[in-house]
Length: 171
Image (cartoon, rainbow, N blue to C red):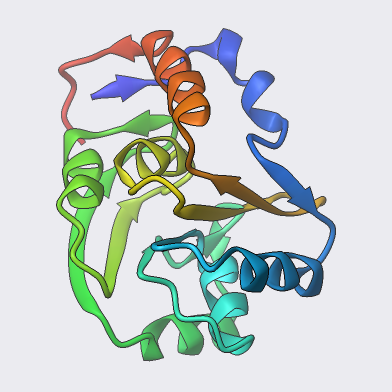
């Protein structure tokens, strides 16, 4: 298990890709990109994409927003996303091997339901997605972030993960 060190927390409060202030702008950009794989990290992001008619290939959800249960509309949207479901455990501030493996082994359409939190799933999602894919996640209070999977972006994320602490702690 990889644990986010306290000194990296401020860095991860900044967008790791291109920030869009609203879903409409993000959808417009996604339609231009035609990514080979679209990965949604977060319940609201998943629901917003589905509502806009874009079905993610992989969705990582935990049925929470800002550590509170999602509203009924979001819950219904996530539940109606037809995909194979994989259930995993992942503590807040960590990336478990379960989460990494679920993303690495993903065969779309896939819904990864996390017991705990999916707050750092963007990092392994970018590392495991095919080049040209897009990972979308919410930036609290700011909008949506689109991370285009490129070799430079993968190198950046690998360098981030090298700064994480390794732990053998269980969920």
